[in-house]
Image (cartoon, rainbow, N blue to C red):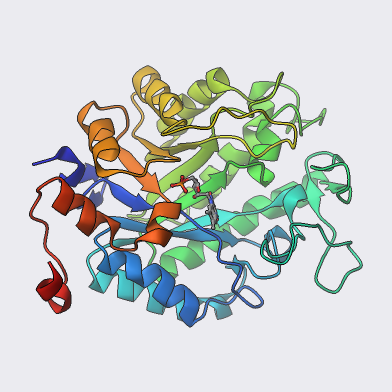
Length: 353
Ligand SMILES: Cc1cc2nc3c(=O)[nH]c(=O)nc-3n(C[C@H](O)[C@H](O)[C@H](O)COP(=O)(O)O)c2cc1C
């Protein structure tokens, strides 16, 4: 049997295969509340045989949303629908996960199908963005407000509170979004963090925001698996790079992080990315080999053969897939068929097997 369909135990987490739905913003929430779109969107992947389903970047505060349509977890009022979502995912054989996020200087944006522009702080659909330093992402963007130490402490607390709610809602994987140029990544990279206090400057200072969030989140989780998504490189000179990612992954693993989910880019508008099939895999492999961390790879992995080879050659432990799951929510069932693996289908769908 292809190892792609072998189970894996990571701490107290058991996954039935190596295919995980990567978090994908749906820009379909109101005031952070999930609705039936999110239930059906996420639920379909459990029916389709994914081992775990990671819910989109879910904001820890209203200002942490990329757009006014993002999901949120800053209030206990948000919990009811999330409980329905996690219950459905579990009932259908998958593990529910959530990505906790703050967009920092990339917040206050429009829904992508309307236009990627950023709203002025005074716009009814926008707000004042926050960041480690007063540097905009795009030249045309609004300059973010530089965070004061007290505000940084408050954000760390908000990540903890969101984690408490995530546990209460039934999520079994909690992923911190430290990639793609959002707030935590803005602290990590010397290109967006020009601070001269204990949260900027040296590598140890730039990673402090993340490690303090992890400490705070760990006070809330019991058996839940803690994952961190990083951008392995900024794809820009003098930025965050693979060497720093390796060092960080080592420290995070020692700190008790269960999975390093390895993506890349998103920090600066002038990044130069070499995109191609599985183009981010070498980063996950390097981190896995140098640190012994359990790693997930993501990005342009589209075929069963490609995914199976990655696992069989031990280049990563998990495969996260985003767009191909939108195209085919039953992707694991179809990959199994292609690889001649007899995997169970939902009994309601057996006549189509
Ligand atoms: C519609 C859409 C929304 C996304 N939203 C998120 C998100 O909320 N958090 C995140 O870390 N990545 C997000 N991503 C990136 C994906 O998780 C994934 O890393 C990327 O699409 C590459 O994988 P793929 O080639 O399998 O699509 C999003 C991608 C898409 C297409």
